[in-house]
Length: 404
Image (tube, rainbow, N blue to C red; front, side):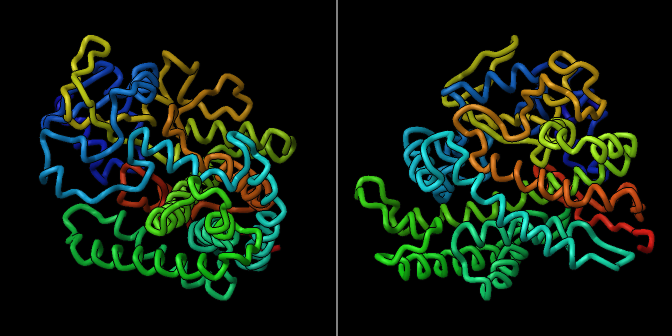
């Protein structure tokens, strides 16, 4: 085993339950480690942070020049989170306008009541059951339902959105050696159907606003601040899919971590006011997003290495979150940790704009579960993980509860 195989080993499914020794090996090998496939792997906190804030580092896969699986010109236009400024800034700003002024939590905070109600409904559905899959029965339906309500999807249509989301997530979670053609085709069809549905729904709200995001998008009075139909559809789909995947992993990783550390579960049960800080620690300790790929727009020198123009650069943010050069005792889960500027939602211009919503969902979800987890037993540890190495989380988390 050499440092040049680290990315291959980290993404190997057999290492999904415990990638942390490989991340430690990466940090020891150097801030930047060239891989056998020509990519460059970065695993230290300060270097990752610097690259996330460097305007010479592109998020657009069309900036990749070598090695490239297909000509850049043949790649489809990505969603705005994979675009660069100024186009990224324009679309991100337009997408965030209905949430209120920049950096204002008002719109997201207004959802607390609805999130509490949805969470209470899901908790009630678990009552009396001795066996529960936290993913399928709780962590998966919660964010899909929340985002449907945020967009203004009628409740009768929410099951349809879950079906579309199932298909899209499955395509992003193909295991090694599996044929991806049919899954990719099904996911593309699901995205198109979802986009068409949302456009039709938005058109029904034109001139008849109902207080939801789709209404805000189509009834924007300033024509210079409006999304085109294609932009509206892709942004709404992005909100649903991106918001869903990260939140499911955050909640599920949180439950698994607390069950593995009953002493910390007891701390949170006694001091529920620590939950916001505990969620931040989960974002550092067991983040829902482990890696992101970027592409230099020019040769970039960092930490004694040169990142060539157009070469893929993999930022292992989960490794940076456990860098002892930044976090004392980084392999310890500490819900009282105060100095915690983690990379769980990235950083820089591409900082996850759904982060405030995911935080609130995780706080409410874990707060509702904590009182029950004291009687829960993990039926599988480690649990089966999703195949996706970049969005790491259990595919199932079966628990057994003591009878009430």
